[in-house]
Image 1 (spheres, rainbow, N blue to C red):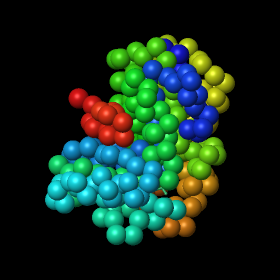
Image 2: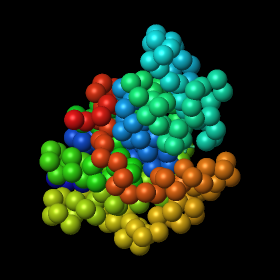
Image 3: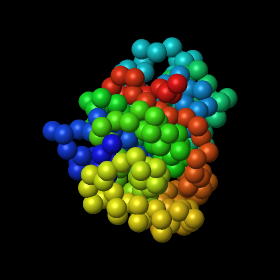
Image 4: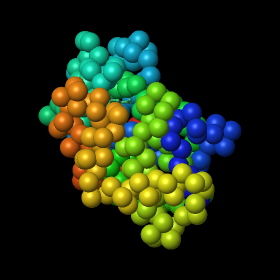
Length: 241
Ligand code: 3SL
C-alpha cells in the first residue's frame, strides 16, 4: 500500500485519485458522521449547498430525516441540528437519514467521490480506519484533510499522522509523499495532548469562541467508536459492515 497525505481537497490530484480516499475533518464533520452512524442513523448524505439539501430531503418522510449543518460553525437557520457530534444520540438519530451540509468536510468528500472506495475518519474512529485499511489493502491510499477554506489545518493533519503512524508500525505502507512524515511527526509530538493542540488550532479557537468546548473535548478522544463510514453512492455514507 502506498500512502499519501493531502492537506486540503484542492491538493488532492483529480487526475490520479487514490484507490481508497480517507476523508478527514476532525473538527467536526467526520467526527459527527462517525458518531451519527454509530448511534444508528440509517445514512448520512452530504451536501455543499443548502438549497440542494432542502430539495433532496424534501422527498423524504419528515419522520425519517434530519436536516443538519453549519455555516461559520453555527447551525443553519431552520435546520434540526447543527454540526455537533454531541447532538447525535441514538434517541435523536436512530433509523433516520442525516442530511448534512458543512463548510469544508462536504467539499472534501465531493473532491474524491470518484475514488473506488471512499471512507471517512476522525480521531474517534481512527483504529477502525486502520483495521479496515490493513484488511482490505488498497494499492494506493490518500488521507485527505478538509482544511479550512482551502488552507491547512492542524487537527486533520494530526489525525492523518495517527493513521499513518499505525500503518507504518505494522510495516504495511510505503510512503507516497513528504507530508506523511510531517503528519507522523506532528502526531508523535502531540499524541498525549491532542486537546491542547486543538485549542491552539485556528478552527479550534473559532469553535471555542462559539462555546463548543465540549465538542473539542469529544473530537480529541481517540479510538472510542468502532464504526467505519463508507460511501455507498456519491454523497451517501453508511456504516461499513
Ligand atoms: O467545515 C466543516 O466541514 C465543519 O466541520 C466546520 S464546523 O466545525 O462545524 O464549524
